Length: 56
Image 1: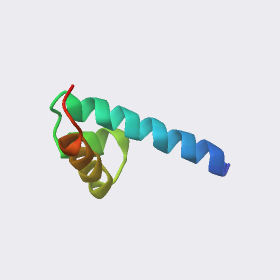
Image 2: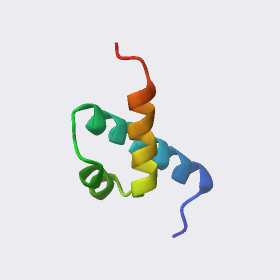
Image 3: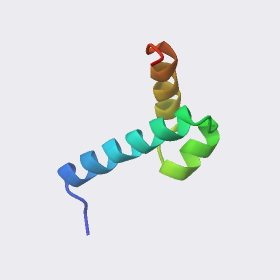
Image 4: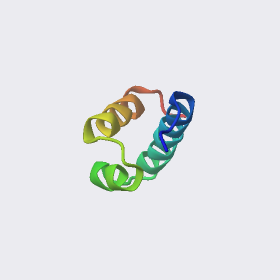
């Protein structure tokens, strides 16, 4: 069964959110990639976003 575009979008957003949480906790990029299925490039971009955002 083919996934709908909406379902894939929701799933990708969920994976990005989970990835951000793991990166905030200090997980490695490789671990986050294996756990979420996101590409290394996507996880690296998320890590860069975290590094550039003001720390609260």
